Image (tube, rainbow, N blue to C red; front, side, top):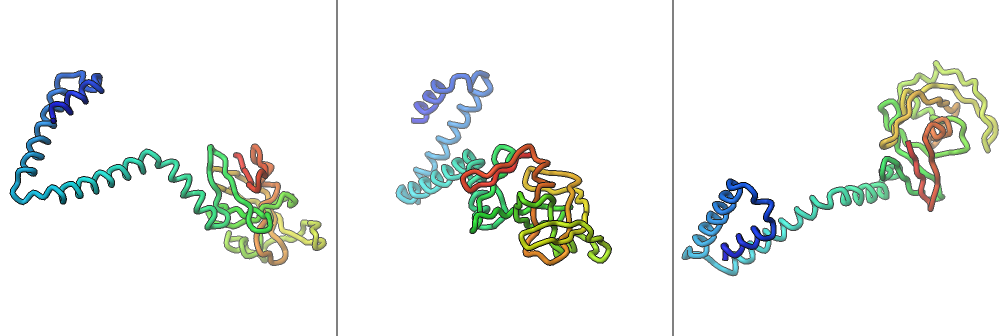
Length: 216
């Protein structure tokens, strides 16, 4: 039986056993396997049914491990998609770009790293700058009392004032933009806004099928 298996493997993969040392190693391995297998089968306490069950379990586990390794990148993509659905703001990276699904109401929430601090933004193409809430600004280490709220912005709620600041870097997944113009809002906000001072620095962005796509 083992000789038949050896001949079949040799015939199927002739190039894999090109060197004499490789052929000797294979024959040695098959003989060891035959010896160990025969000893187990001939042992007085050998139970065929139990051995068959254990063999099938190990074969199943091996198949699962092999399939997991073979499809590891697909599984990572599926995990990223599930995580992005469970945690607002986490996008799915595909081919260097990052995608975000619309939240309730059609808004896009993006989790970014601003100067090493995690900040959750609402994407707003109507905002000329990145607009930071006072709470997020304090987390970034700015002192509100030292800022000058001199910049006027027209919003749906009227004119508001902001304090111009510069951010060293904003990272979103594989995208990194340095030296970003931003403004600190003069009144509390529920969430900071990711405006055009960041979006215009990308190669492109688009909304398609309720999905925001950002490209570096």
